[in-house]
Image (cartoon, rainbow over all chains, first blue to last red):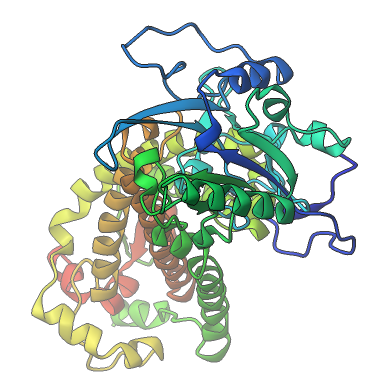
Length: 291
Length: 205
């Protein structure tokens, strides 16, 4: 939804500058996987605050519940059972939108203002402008947006933009009992993460680190990973970027194609002006017939 | 009285104009979703969401109608050495210098090229269009294929629109052509001038 108290920095399908005079603090959510106990309080808080209720699924022998993101489930705990150093580890990652600084969904969206990026870094879907084409799904490097079967609009985590706009932390942060979820300025979160990473390294997780992928300009949801050298253990892409196919489609192709179409139409008109029409002399035929 | 020669039957004309109307709607609504500067064209179909809903159905209708045309005109569009010679003299063609041009049959080299470009792009548009068709088909395809399809759809549509701009301009430039597709006939002088071999085939001298 549109919020008057949040400045919009970027707007989908808009080629001119958005209002950009005011400077606002960049926010971030830090997800410290080493502190997560998989209680799913964040899932419950998300559903409660955003008035969502997914259909009751089926137990498939895993802890993942619901089994994936949907229009009704904007965050999901994903449980990975791994043995990265020979010892069993339960890696539990809270999945959801990472709020990229360079959002692929926004680049791909053809509907003006259906996807916006606030100056604080939050990427939000304005469903009333969404036309249901699903291009954002193709644009996203993290497989986040979900198209609703009910209304053919896409939904995802808003980072509780409505709460953040009035100085509250996102609902999931409020509910987390272990401090695995922290919210604040991006600067503070990076600072907090470096303390956590140092602590983990002391405890033997020598590859601990921050997941803030540069390929999408950094993200406004960042992870502390025990094994930052192997993000795939957590189901995260190693070096996410907007697919070159999408960049090509939404990058150079658009202006070049429009230019060439214009040039062809204009060129045709000028051909007519310079060379003139190709006319058939009907009289000649008549004369021949008469003679 | 000027002699008239039938070039297109009533069925062929209806088939052509059905395809043409569908094409215009598709090109405008497709451009609307292709470039932000064209988004206002979504109003033609009743807004962005209606454009997303209707565009694919109209696309299928255009493809089916086009395939009927392909069947009608297939035999006349095989490229020959003669067409290559005609195309090689495109500068003369463009400047209305027709003396000594190779004799043209029912279609000239340019028209035949357009026929094949249209067939290729229409096939690519159909296949890629199905892959990105929300909400019915897109969800079942892998994401990389969907990404490839959106790019293919845009590029094919661009080539097709370019081809049709040339097609429309040629009909305005070569006087006497439009009547062939609106009323169905051309004058024998026109046929002799632009399609001499075809003129002979249909009984002219």
